[in-house]
Length: 459
Image 1 (spheres, rainbow, N blue to C red):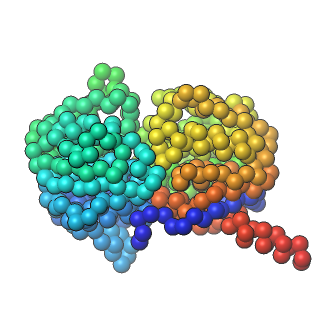
Image 2 (image 1 turned 30 degrees about the vertical axis):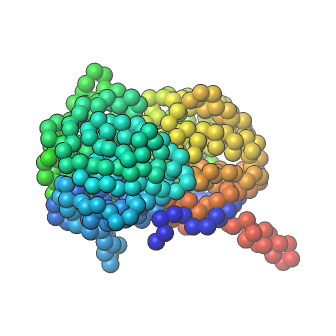
C-alpha cells in the first residue's frame, strides 16, 4: 500500500432520511499504534485482533518492519508482531515515512532514542509542518541526538543511543504523545524515568506497558499525576484485542443526533474515561445517548453506544476537558451550529498544531456554510441557528477530521456540503463512507449526485 493518501477526491453530503442500524467502527487508532510498538519491543509474539488498518497505523507497521521487527497480517485478519526485545531493533535501510501520522512519528521517536542507530523521519506535506520540538526536548535530555541541529520539523535524522539517561519530566501542557514518547524511551534507560502531568491525558500507554509486563506506577502528585517507569525490564508479547475507536464512533453518533427519527447503535467502542469527553459534553447538551453492555477488553473499558435524534442546547466546554476530547472538537463545533443558544469551547490551543490549524479551518468552513462562529485566542464560539444553509465547498487542508465533520454536518444543512478532498479520511477511518451509507446517509461524488438528479428530472 502507498504511505500517502490517494489522489484528491471531493465528496458531497446532503439531507438524508432516517439513519438506523447497528455498526462496528474500526479499531482504536491510539491503541493500535501502541500494540504494534510494544509488540516489536517485547520478546516473543504479539497477536493483535481488531487492529485499525488505516494509513496512520500501516505507516507505523512499515516503520517497525524497516527497523527489523516482524509484522504480518494473518489470513484471518489478525496481525502478528514478532518482537526483537528491548534494544533489538536495527538501523533502517531507508527513511521512516509516517505519512500523516503525528502519533506514529512522535511515539517512534521515543523508540529510536533507545537504540544505537540513525533513522531519518519524514512524512507528508501536512506532517512536515507539525512541530516536534516538545517531544524532542525531553528525549534530547535523555541522550537522543539530532543531525539537523536547530530544526524541530520533519524531515529529521535522529541518532539514538544504547545508554539513555532516565529523567523526571514535567509536561508543560497535557500531551499523551509527549508522555508516551518519554515513557517508551524510559524502557531503555537504567533506572526510573517519570513523567508528571498536571491534567490527566490519555493513559493507553501506561495500561499497555503494564499489560506487557513493565514495572510502572501511577500516583497522585501535586494535584496531578506522577507516572514512574523502571527501565530495562523485559516485556513479553501478549494477545491484544483492539476495541472500536471512540473518535470514529463520534461521527456516526453525531449523524444520528442531527438527522430526524434516527437511532444508531455503535458496538464495541472504547470508553476509557480519558477519551469520553465528547460523549460527556453531548449529554450536557441534551443528547439522547447511552452506554450499553459495558465490559472490559484487554484491560480497557468497552461499551456499545446508542444515539437517537435529539434537540441540542449550547453549553460551555471547560478547558480541563480538552485532553479527553481533543480530536472531537471539529465534530462538536459542527453540531453546535444546530444547538439552541451559544456553545463555548475553551482551551483549544492544541487544535492549532494538529493536521491543520483546526480552529481556523472550522471557523472558515462553518462561516462558509452560513453558520456563526469565531475563534479568539484558544476559545471557539459557535452560535446555534434553527437552520444552517450549507451549500459550500470546504477546504479540508489535508485534515481527515475536518473532512468528516463537514460531511456529517451536510446531512442536516439546507443545501449539500462538499469537501474539497476526502482521500485523507483513509488515514484514520477508511470505512467512514461505507458505514455512513450503511446506516442511510447520502454521500456522493459531486458529479455522481448531479447525474442522479438529472436522471430523476427525466423520469
